[in-house]
Image (cartoon, rainbow, N blue to C red; front, side):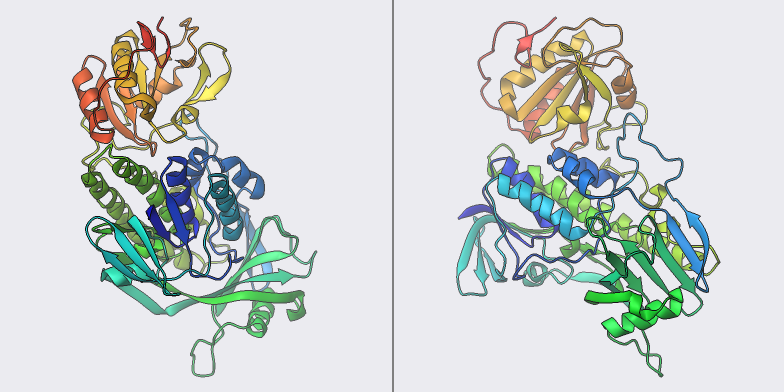
Length: 533
C-alpha cells in the first residue's frame, strides 16, 4: 500500500507527485494512456505556475526549453494587418520575478516534470486504468482494468475532464457545453521558410479563422487552431489532414501543399463545468477533473498546477500525523472559489475576444495579456488565513518575493530561495522577533525554516540570516517595527503578526505542524542554528 495513488499523469498529476515525493510521501502515479502523449495542447505555464515550478526545482529547465510569449501577427483577407505584443511595457518587479508566462509544448513540460519525478525515485505507470474505487474509511482500494488492485491511504483524481475517478465518486459536473462554438486543433508542419517562426500567426475572416503558433523545440512544428469545416447543411465535419489543408489555404491564401502533415487532430468544444465538491472521504479531485472552462487566457493547465501545489503539502502533513484530516477540507475551501472565478473570467475573456476579432487588427491579446488572468486572488477567505497585516498584503495572499543578500557572505539571494522546499518559513523583522524564531526552530525542527531579516544599513554577519539591503522585503509585506511573517509551504502568507504576539505565531504553527516536544536547543541564543547578533 502506498500513501497516495495519483490517477492521471498530466501536468496536474505530475506536479502533485513531485511535491509529495520530495516530502518523503509514498506516491504511485498511473495513467491509462499506453504511452506519453506528444501533443502541444496547453501553451505553457503562467507567472504564478512558474513560481510553483521554481519551488519544485524545475523552472530553469522550463525557461530553457520554452520561449517568451510571441508577438501576434493578425491578417485579414490573407494580408498582414498588424503585429501586437500583449506584454509590451511589462517587466519583472522585486516582488514578482515573472511578468509573463512561458511558451512551451505541454509534452515538453510533462517530460521535465517526469524527469524531476524520476530523480525522486518515482516513475509514471502507463497503460494502467482505474475502473473502481472502494473507500473503507481508513484506506482506498482502486480496482485496475487488468484485474489487479492498488491500495493507498488517499487517492487523487487528476484524470481530466472525463475523469473516471469523478464519475466513480458520483460527483456531478455541472455546467454547459456549447455545441455550436467549435474549434479544431492539431499539431502540423509547415514548409520551412514559409512563415516567420518568431510570431504567432492569426488569420481572422468573416467566415472563420486559422491560428498557427510555432512549437518551441521543433524546427517545423506548429500548433494549429481553426474553426471546423462544415458541410452544405452547416454541420461541422470531423477534423482531417485534408480538411486542415483546405482551411489553411482558404484563410492564409497560401498553397495547401505547404501544410505538409497534420497529427493529433481533435475537436474542442467550449465546456464550462465544475464539480460541486473536491473531496469524498479519502478521494480528492484536482485539475480538469474538478473544473473545465473556456480556452481564453490559457488558464486550464495553470489552474490544475496550482490545485496540486495547494493540495500536496496538506496531504503530506496529514499523512505524517502533523495535522488532522480537517486540513484537507481547506483544499476545497480555498481552490473551489478560485475555479469558480476562473470559469467566469475565461467566459468573459472569450466573449471579448470573439468581439475583438470581428474588427481588422483584432486578435487574442485580450485573452492572453497579463491582465487577463488578473492578480493571483490568494485565499483571504480561508480558515487558514489569520487576521493581520498592513498595506496590500494580508494573510492568505500569495507571498511576495524580494531580492536580499546572505547576511554573512553578501551573496545575492531572494525570498523565494528561502521559501523553496517542503517546509514552512518564518521571517522575523526586527530584534524583537528573535525569541519567536528560536522557539519555532526548537519546536518544529526541519519542518520550519526561520530567517531573521535585517534592514538596510545593518551589519549582520549571520549565516542563514537575510539582509534586506534595499528594504524590498519589508515594503513587500507592509510590516512596521518588529514583526513575524509565517509563509505556508505553498508560498502563501499564513500569518502576519507583531513580534510580541508570540502566542499567535505558536498557535498558527501548531495548527499546520502539530505541537510536539521541543528539540534540544543548539546553543544559547541561536537563530536557525546560528548565533544571534
